[in-house]
Image 1 (cartoon, rainbow, N blue to C red):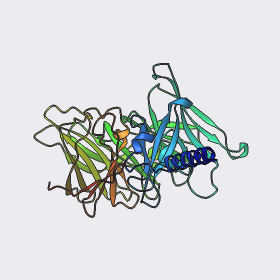
Image 2: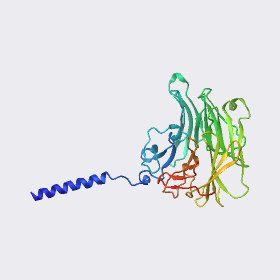
Image 3: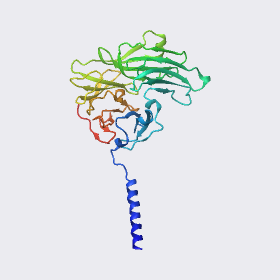
Image 4: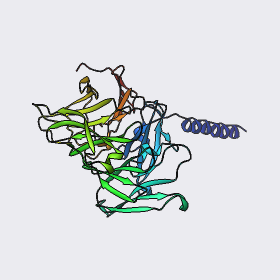
Length: 355
């Protein structure tokens, strides 16, 4: 009898211990244990501006992306089945936006060799129903191409090649043509205008640190002068720096991330450099704010950071990716109303230091 009670008590204790172990919550700040820091990328701000999307390359499934959501800083990542395609497909597939008018989509398709080098590339406009239009396809140079948006009339698609050239695809006339920019020879960002009747290109020229050019879709076809200069920021007379620039959703503010270093090269960010975020008013061309940012990793060239920083939809915050070491990935955001910087993987906040 005593032996039976002993065995029963051992069994009960085992169940309790197992249950306690199984129900133990994950400690705060352990997002990296679940998300490989080498594979994670920024997927965009959530529509309510409170959380962010992450994209993870699933190496076990031929590199297919898995989308996760952090609903607040230091939250457990959850599967984001409803992540907006316009934000997370990274320019390879572009659906028409709004209502039930999903009659067609544009897609960039690439073939790669074992080393990951692109061997073939093409862009296609595909109609979802046969009676809506005729599919079209154009072969491209075997390099990276990105899609940026449809025009308001759902006829034109903006596409770029390796941040060097801009193209417009005409879905009705089955044509594709290069856009003639006035000054820009290398760019960071292409943004549709609010009315989608044109788009902005943010980049650099031989004489300017930053230039914003505007392209009206109608001018691509009907006029020789296809773009006009909206903003021109001259190069600094001293020092060396790498820059990234992104236009705000309302097209009123240009955010420029600067990485100043004695040995800086174009588009190469150094770990021991000084990082700054500078905000320019597009209408006046004047810098309105300068914020210091944390230092990042020595090699940011292979990170999706080169597509950022990323504006929040309400124009009040920016996210940026500056991993401290190659195996410690995180995303920061800065609240432009307070200057407070938040680490999304730890919830750690820091006040904005004086510029």
